[in-house]
Image (cartoon, rainbow, N blue to C red; front, side, top):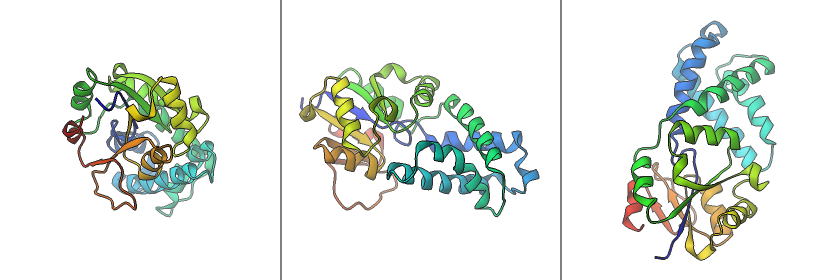
Length: 231
């Protein structure tokens, strides 16, 4: 068996960030009376939140902003996308409530539980995530998948963030995994795939949206169950 250790990204790869975040936004819409603030449909706000969240996470992963900037700015930016101005303090308060709610949600990507159950008897499974450690642990417990994983590496534990080589090297080190017997599985071409390729770590690009990418990884799948084709 070529691979012994499988390193998974968490958000968007196993844990369904989009579905869980949408549920949280619906709850926040009521709790903070977004309608009174001028928001029409909750779906409109969620669309703007998605744009703002991806924007700030891209800046974070490119080392343009610190992690705290994501927390401070994304909700204020989501409201601004609808032409609504709110105080930064309100944006932070809503974000704190979002981070309290989000890890309590349990929706997984289609096929995630089944593929983890299939893989666990044959491989040592690990997580490499750019998310905050405490939040990621709570998500995994809520979704009842924490028992599948032998190690969890985040930017806090590694003092580095994907695609930095240091976070992959840290994960390999703490799991006592060799490079040639390890495989990275993730949905972000920039963070997961390019990061893995930078350290010569084989990688699976989970690509349900069939994005065009400049350089082909070791494997590419559109559904997690396709991993059974080579694992």
